[in-house]
Each structure stands twice: as structure tokens, then as C-alpha cells.
Amino acid sequence: MKAVSLFMDVEDPINPLADDAALDFPRLFADQGVRGSFCLTGEKCRTLKQRSRIDVAEAYKPHALGLHTNRHSFHPTTMELLADLSFDEGCEAAYSEERQGFEAFCDLFGRNPIFWGGGGNTWSPEITDTLKRLGVPAYAYAMTELPDHAVHEFNGVLALPQALSISETDWADDRRASEAVERVLRSIETIDQPWIGVFVGHPTKFRHNEYWDKPYYFGRTPAEPEFVQPVSDDVYKRSKYNLREFLGRIKEIYRVIGVDDTVRMDWRFETPSTEDFAHFESRTSASLRGATGWPPHRLGLSADKIVDKTMNLKHTLRRATLS
Image (cartoon, rainbow, N blue to C red; front, side):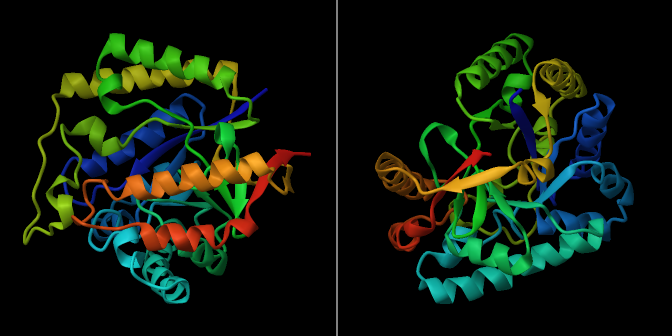
């Protein structure tokens, strides 16, 4: 039976309803008997601690938990921070930044994150050095890529691709939700991999019309918090209902596991084929260059140096298969 991990990103430190939404979803998963893989920013961890939302932290503890960067869309983003640095300089800068998120995460949950997930489309290979130094064994939403969404190892860290996703606007509409669920279930069958990652949304985006970080688009940093508008309670309830139905269905078909169990799978690592390397070079370079268009990034951001640093480490690439 294929293994599937279901991801959500918990990152909004600004909007008043975001903390309550952050509480709803780990409880929703638990009520359905499904362990989620939730990715929380360091800033969100600090915010929950400052607001004494220990109820939220406790709700997440039964699930697999990852660090979703230290500050996500606050500037500089991961790519903005590292785009112009040498690899050695970038390793120190990345460690200095992400260690703050790591410490906030450990302070809130009393344990280490099992994985790291890039915020939106932002990454640079120095992150893998940081993860090894912090003892985090995997990164999700991998912008490094092998054919058919294969799990792989890059610079000594397990790389987990996001193969499939369902958006919050899909969950909010019964017809669209049904179509998206059928699409994802069909796609899982066609992907010839033992593990598949599926992204199912952001708690705050279920609750709000816009992403929380829209005020930070194009390198902007507002002087005061700017809020986005919530959706109606009826829309929010409908979205949660459709996600709940999906969880009940997928757990009957596949083995739904957290990333902690994914890391513990009996992976064996092989030297990639010539075709694998060609795919990696082409698709990873394209993904990194395309990532500069992620809306929070400053205008004019170049990924050229990040691509070069990534390709300089291609000799560390290993394809993961199950023993």
C-alpha cells in the first residue's frame, strides 16, 4: 500500500482569527484518526507563546511537525538572504536565521522539528547545511527534483517533493472540492512512488480571503500590521467539512503517515542515472529561477547564483528507493 503524507502550513502571525484556525485543523485531523504533517514558522511559534495559546501547541503535538522557515515572507526571505552570497557565507547566514526559528519551535513544542519546509517558493542549498547542523533530517516541498516526484537525498538531507495539492478555494466549493479530490486520488495511482506528499492548505487561508502576507508582496514591509478580510462562517464550515470528508476517504485507501514515519522508512540510496541527472539539472534550475516570481520576493531578484551553488552540489544527489 502506498504511503501518503498530508501537509498544512501554519504561518500567519498577524490576523486575529489565525490562531483559532490554527487550532481547528490539528483537531480536525485527530478527530478523523489521521496524523497530519504540519509545518509551522518560527514567527508563528513565537506568536503563540506570546499570546499564551498553549491550547494550540498541545493540539499539534500528536502530529508530525516541521519548521516552515524562521520568518516566511518577512524580508529578507530565504532566497533574498542568500541570493548574492558565496556558499560558505550563505551557510553562516542561513544557520543564523533558521536557528532562531528552530529554537522558537523547540521552546513551544519541547522537541525538534522532524523536517523543514520552504516558505512559498524560496530556497537555497545552504539550507541543507543548516539542517545538518541542527539535526533536522529532511526538507519538504523540495525544489530539487528527480523524475516522477521521487524522494531523494541532496547534500546529505532527505528531500521530499510535493507531488499534489488541493487549494483552499477548492475546499470552499462542493463541486470543486469533489473534482479536486478525484483528481488527487487518480494522480496518486499514476505516480509510481512508494511515498507521495499531498498539500491540503493553510489554516489561515481557509479562514481569510487573502494570504496573510499580501502586505509583504514585492519586497514591501508595512510600518504597521495590515489585516486581510475573513471569509464567512458558512464558507469556513463548508471548507472544513469537505476536508474532513477527504481525510475519512483517503485513510481508507492509503497508508496516511506523518513525515516522522516517512523519514523512518527503509530508504536505500542509489547513484542517479544519466537521465536522472539531466532531469535534475533542467527542472531544478527552472524551478529555482521561477521561484523569484513568488510575490513576496523583491523585484529584480536573481536566482543565478543560487542555481550555480545548487549545481555545484549535484554530485551529492542520490535517488531514494525502498529496500
